[in-house]
Image (cartoon, rainbow, N blue to C red; front, side, top):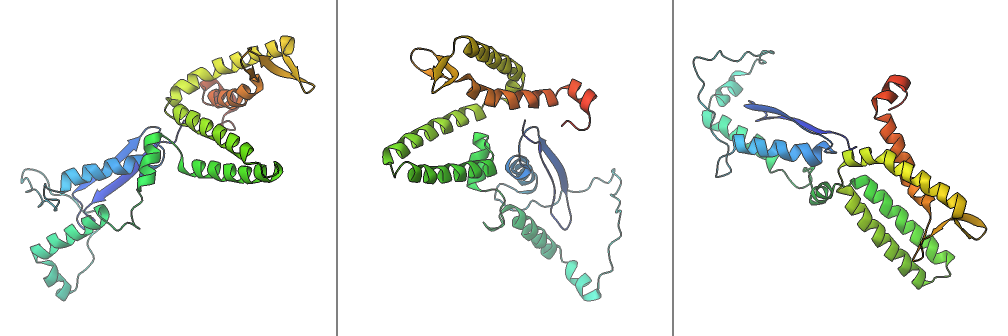
Length: 248
């Protein structure tokens, strides 16, 4: 399961009128999931239809005045006289909030690539690491195969199939994968017993199932089933009671 995404904010910075906390279950990074929601809430509350900062709402005299936990620091007379201008203070609040919402491109933590990865439910650093490993493997394969372009093309095709499978599996609900993990492990164990009895022998090893059209190697399935089952067990209450806190 992915990490929970959370983000806390208040605005405007000088005289806050709204504070909020956003949490997205299994959302991943805070900047990719919770922060866009918080920004939309701040925009809806503070900005008008023209995109400018709304004036403060009138205070209800029936409500108690807000208390300040920390008293304001003394302000010099010259600066105090400047701050008494309502228009200047309003402009300052607008500038501060614009800095948060419409900052420069280098200041923005949300990029187009981050939004695409979040929409596809993919982990950015993991994708970069996998791409680097794939490129390095292609370079080694090109050298080891005697600079065979046909071998490289075949490998690129398999990488494309693997990428498509990754995109499909990324859309599956993690809770569904967690529930099916023990069944996948049991199915893989059954296939291994079948291989032990009637498996195809190739290159001196009995590890294949000959299905007529293709030859299937159940041990490849277990490479996914074993870590998924271990993760399922670590998330169970039995594991937390027996092995806590060393497990998970």
